[in-house]
Image (cartoon, rainbow, N blue to C red; front, side):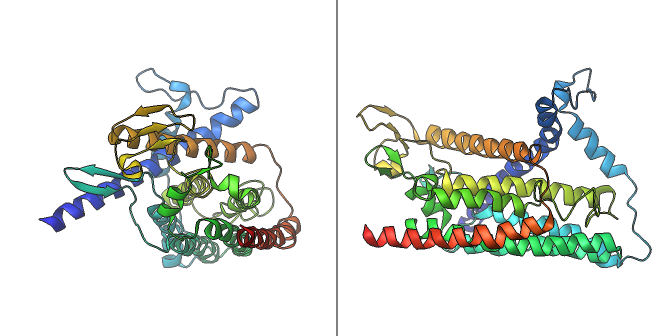
Length: 368
């Protein structure tokens, strides 16, 4: 019976995380068109209605899904059949796994059972994240090679070079927060960020590691292969690794790209912006009593743990929405780098700065 309950709890958490991620990914297909329309003073998607309702074009996502489902799934005769079919799965599946180690809450007690609000709680969560997050590029290079098209192959090769380069930057920037918080487990790292510096300032990663944040953000955008780092897809140059794909196979690459945006936003929030935390809001596990707001000037607002969990999940979603908005803003504002500029920025500027941040962090920790 205990095993059944634990299984149901695990399945419930997995279902919640998948619904959370896919909801944001689907909304991004609409925001990708609506936000630049507002920036460029035009209407954008607004024509697809359901029962006469347009809802600012939000039904376009549904229409595009049906279009991809019923679109012809063309496979080039000279392509490697198995690799061509399998590549979109390899590109999509590892990205979904990375969100398993990101906590969306602390813990909740139901019927005397304490439920940890994290799908996978392991003490090497950051290593798990880096390992599985890097696997998605295999699907891209496999799709480019299997297409038997020189432009697709060139896009896949660009993706490998770009991903390897900026994974080094991401790995080095994460070392700073790991040194400060003393853990590789993301849940513990988020809990540490709810502590206060000087009695009033939340110990968020962006406060104690500002340089790491400024390096992690552009490196993460480069990992998602989005403008201004969209060299693997360069429509005006090589068309990209997905040139020969159509229908839902192309849609899986497209969906994987949007899920990467959600994962990147989740990482930014978790590592640098307190995760699910709301400043000065604590649950009963952290206060060893009744949870609620405890302000530095002495005022308190008691809240039941269930409301603390709801507020924190809403806070987590709002922070992710903000960083998704920021990524779209960057995507529709900046022009594409040249390939030599892309590699030079990564290896000659960002990696030395990341190493400098590690050295400075070590010096400050030793001094304190």
